Length: 294
Image (cartoon, rainbow, N blue to C red; front, side, top):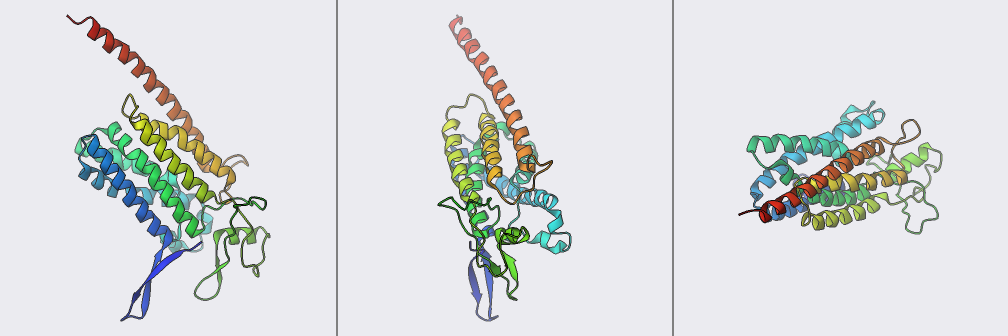
């Protein structure tokens, strides 16, 4: 865990500008995702500059949507200090909130510039998975999105007890969570071992990127890459939630992310099946037309 990645000194002011690892990794995720999306857009005869412009709008909308979703989910943690809502650099984003806000922004942009909506979605979807993976490294360095207790797992991690500038204990999130449950004492230097769910998510998202990139060559209709993402990612997220230790359950059954995952999986599976059935009907019809052509 390393919340501050490095500091930029200001010699004349005798101060330093902290570069937070979470925000830095979000920047890396954005740059990598846009680079891949521009490359794929060029291959698909789509103006790469449109991808860059779109990405900027989507990122701002996505961060806002992800932050709002997080605040709604954990509003009790901010009730007594509303200014903390704006401390995005400390972490606290929910991917589904960002995804929905990003899709709405993309739809508005595509309509305004008369671009092929489904084709554009297929171009950027693998990059979304890749960017999400890099973002999870930021979560790991920040200490958020931690897993459940895993005392017998060899690769489990122990997040440290951290202090603010005044010497008061301000983290890590895993340490504070376990302290509230009475599992650790303030004198302890580390939290108990937990699953490194951030790294699980990173590896899963990278694998998803490659799956979507390979499938891109074999899609039969525009929109299928997005729908395949909508089938696989909810499974990944649902499983990750089973190992996460920071999200509350609703009705002692599922987290909000799991509920959304179930709905997203069902809708995407149905639409993907419909797309494939329609494609299967179109191909024989086209062959028959060519065969009977005089």
